[in-house]
Length: 351
Figure (tube, rainbow, N blue to C red):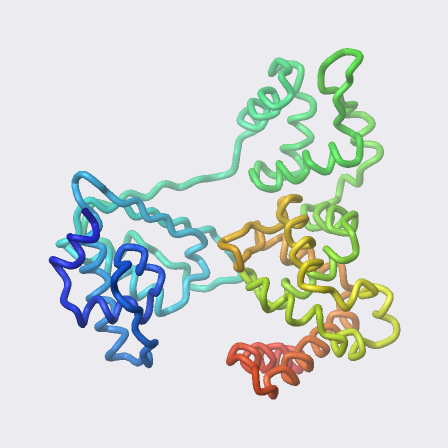
């Protein structure tokens, strides 16, 4: 039993430390009262890393091994990197399969190499782009047509996307949404016209342009919610987005030439939640928890910002966001994140 293993192997002080930083583990310890949050400094963080490894060793057993998957490690922060390093360097760790996904990103310097830190068995699997044959297999299975029948469509998709799996699905979604890929009830099968696709779609379109068209086809309230979220980061809290969008001051701070684009404002919390649900249904964002979301790909975040004209439009929205957050940070019921987010936005605006 995991609860017994934790209580038998860990001291009261160690359990309280974990509860103060990770309240969610109270699920394993229902009779323990969550401790107050502690100040995080170098000493307490080093102690936490030691206790966290001990906690993992308690819950990983031969009968109940643990698989821990960490995505998007190219954006890992220093503290998380230190914590991961301490785990993979722990020679006492058993029955744990740690999987880390790192994507090559030209905007990130010094991509995290998980394999260089491990002292235990470690394998590196390089996942490259899909081949033309792979894409043809996927389209053939999805359309229930033979591989020979889908070769012409697969060639177009491969040419447009370079074999990137995410881009390929977005391109196919665009073809379906714009009626280039349709299901015929007369012939009872999927149909397309490659000549029509080549003549009526811009061959120079990249995935950002395709995503921009998809975003602009959504309701205005969804677009506005996504724009605010995109300025807050790759992952974001819906509480933060709701807080901004329900404020009358946000719209008032917009210049007149932008007010039509943001005419959905102000939005109630219910409207914002519905908008984010629609964005998730469209494959643009993924839910991490009830309150936390992330963009399904960094190109989606980039595409959302691309719905604003580069230059004055983007700067005005950024300034408005920074200003409203700065005003919110002065209220009695303000939260710490408001001031930090405001400073980040306003400093970025002035670069």
